[in-house]
Length: 286
Image: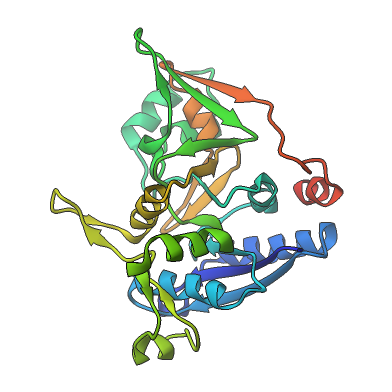
């Protein structure tokens, strides 16, 4: 079955950034040239409650068995088509990416720029902080060294943000079947009016308050539920990502990871079946 992917975007106020528009248009165009059998559809929702927006978008994929994947692309993200090509080609049910937070650490940036051997752009990437970077899965040795294994440009994480996130329909079905309390067979009329015309509602992005009294956001809540049913979370780290706000916050997680002297990043040349498919290679070059 050829992939059919719903590009899903919560856009409060019906606004998206230019980088988002250019990235989505470029991605669809690249895949049309390299892999015309892959079908993309898009849904942008203007819902003030982010968890409800994501729940509705996920439920749209559940309600239509012709979909194979849900691709969340937030309205403030910019990326290359190769990012999504890698996600798809991995065959993993849940793949995200590691992108920079919307802030500049001026002190760290200045200290990094003081090294004459570090180019300006590399310094910016190193000095950036990254969403959920502390949740990376790593091995810690007695001498304090850390080891992270990179498999096909991806690293395993405990938590990730939803900036650009690919989830298979099978993963959503697994959540529905394993956590039946999240499933609403007949949603409220308000849910219908906001875009879910038919089918049930999967509340997989509902926020919750943890045991410490902290409100867990919808992205982290989804990760907790996925891991609760035994799922793994992988994220692409070798792609440049832009997180747009009052400025363009550029990031490249692998460059930042390799800059840590206490950390050893080891690449693993492990290719999933079909990695050399012509459509994939062309998509990466597009």
